[in-house]
Length: 170
Image 1 (cartoon, rainbow, N blue to C red):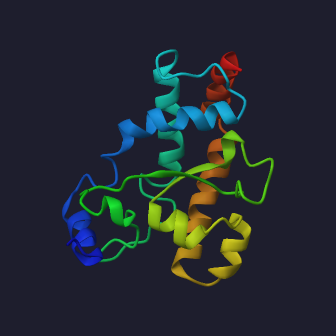
Image 2: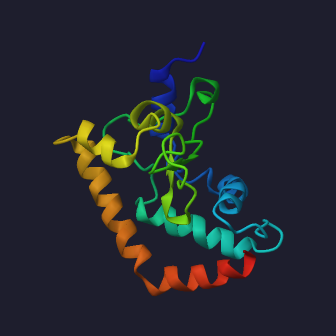
């Protein structure tokens, strides 16, 4: 039987643990983009555009899970069914929860989380609720860092160019 400690040690020993799942994410984001109004997006129609979107979001997170903090063992990990993997298997999280907001399907609302963080830290709360819960913690500082990076991205010409291209697939 695999334990959580073994899984975390395995993640810590893999230098590619945080980037190995990127190719799969380019396929999994398609349905989310469609929910955001880009109904003609498919991986075969615009693979470079999808890759650019995933990379932009991932870069704002410093190429790690949204709630990542450092330590000798990772504090972000997979769900038990994926403890055999030596990499983070990302989930698309919604900063404004789909369970609380009908308007949660926005392209600027998506982030990349480990299963543990999506299910046990965010737990269907909006990010502002999570921040109150985490107030003063190292995780709050991490979230504020990522949110600042996201604001910078969403005001950039790179983002505006990406949106212009994506709008062709509405």
